[in-house]
Image (tube, rainbow, N blue to C red; front, side, top):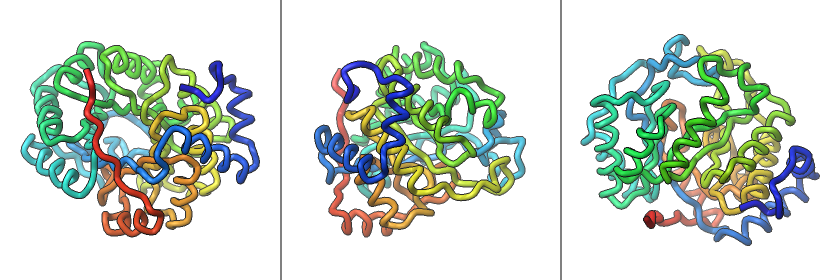
Length: 322
């Protein structure tokens, strides 16, 4: 999976990340073109199927119950409403529909049964189905696979060293264990991080090293720019530099050449030129729709203009082969 013949060392990753910017972008663009159609972008829609009230303390998240934000807790959506949203996403050009629930972990109950029904319904619509529901066991992952789930998102967020500055209610090992459970079930892994939480370049390098050093690198690597939300501990963080985003995306592309690298949260604060740099550096997937769970995102009209100007086209759904 890696451009190198052996797994990269931390020093290898640091050397890539710290390459002069134009050389780094050029190298990443070459790797991208060797493994992907540079004009094709996977369009995903992320739907919050159960919003707010989460018991975790992730410092960036407005859905944590302990923070005073504008997000109000809502119950798990009805299956029909979720499938209506999935149908709308498909009709607007999305090929993957991701369902997110503000849970610490999945529990074996009627709500999980309802999520399994949602997965089956999304697959029936011809979409790739993805979930992000918190921690899952091997058996829960197996049941989601049997329902047709294509991908599971569970981000590492940052380096192991910086992690407890952001989250203390769940360990780094917890996250790695969930990724292993998902992988054992034969579900593809979607796992990345957030840039701009106060972490150092070394933390970003360590995160990318961890992702590239997993037994199998994630098939999808979302790179998020922090969206600072009032009421959260990271509310006062300044917007991250576009060059930090570009460096992170380009390094991810070089380390994980066959993965989809997703330009995720934070696009609303980026210009067309900023986003074009990210695509040039190897990003080939976005989240579309007016919201990413609870944070604002560019609307479909703005994305269509962006795609037209850059000559990009949405990628068709890839049907999983058993």
